[in-house]
Length: 268
Ligand SMILES: [Zn+2]
Ligand SMILES: [Zn+2]
Image (cartoon, rainbow, N blue to C red; front, side, top):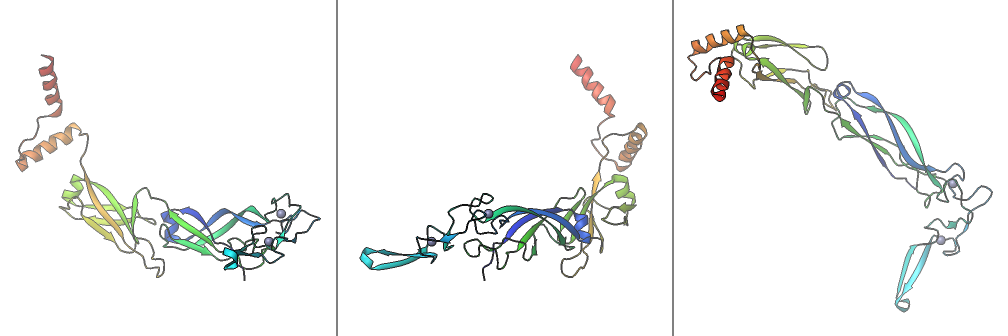
């Protein structure tokens, strides 16, 4: 039985959709049977006629080298349709197919990854007019390629979600109780005293579900220690005390004083 071509289209979803699964509205265009001529390609009131070139066979025999070779090829006049159209259908200009737009609701399973496709059977094109003018036969399939858009704060690593979490030097040094964003409700994590930049903490099961098993990945939090760009007077004083306590060498003198000295020096 004649079968039509498969089609491919794309749909974009976000990580929240990957978590729960979703239905996506998909709009695409496919070559479909012309309603005006029901696929024959002949203008209303006229009919296709038997192809004269191939005598309705759809193929022609070509001979070469004085009859030594005989080759069967698709008839160049009717392209295998066995019939030709004298008076062409105005809607499809004799092709029997017109582009038609179609809208579908496609169910996207939870856990799907970027670039994977959902197959929708029978939503592709009808068999080509050469094989089946009326389109009778089996339609191809529609492949909906899923694109997962990048998330503002989470990076996806397989079924895990990676979160780079900015924490302050004092939180890292003294320990802190953090509320982490997840795709659902916030999760709490204890960052122990003396945690380093790049330390990794996991919230098991707060990642994405695996496509087949539904088993959830983890939320993986990586600390990023942020240094304040501006200090209040009090903060600066306290940090200087800390530096003295640490016997940290080479600490620059107070910013304001330092720059005014430079300015004075240049202005001299
Ligand atoms: Zn038509
Ligand atoms: Zn022909």
